[in-house]
Length: 191
Image (cartoon, rainbow, N blue to C red):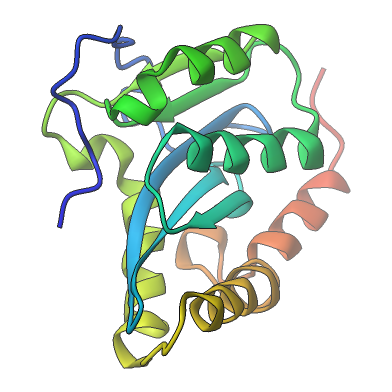
């Protein structure tokens, strides 16, 4: 199963991120991607936006369709919840959903710089791929979702209740994304 349609004639952004997965502050670099979750009704697609500073899922959307509306919904949630400054770097793969005119326009309207992985190189978006691996290992592989609605409930619980607030991350010094952001906000920034 593939979630990336990179065989399109839409514009592709250069890889500005260049695997720099450790920005110095929140809302400096976001990364996004799409995965799929099996249910007995068929696939449920999940688009997420992560803040690379804390690895926190700051935007997500789920639907039975894998189109630009799915990724725009996840982006909208992230933008409404975070209000990032102009100049934020936003990284994705080369999928048609992210290269779409609507998505590009939404980024440009907020002064967000865009970066895309090199063709066929999943390592360029390794943090989001790692999140999906965790999600599938710790939830999806052992689940038998009878409906898409059941999967949505399970995914919500995993992302908002467990992953963002409780799950400890080795890359964050074994604290949760929420705790990492809370601690970072209490440290004065150097002039």
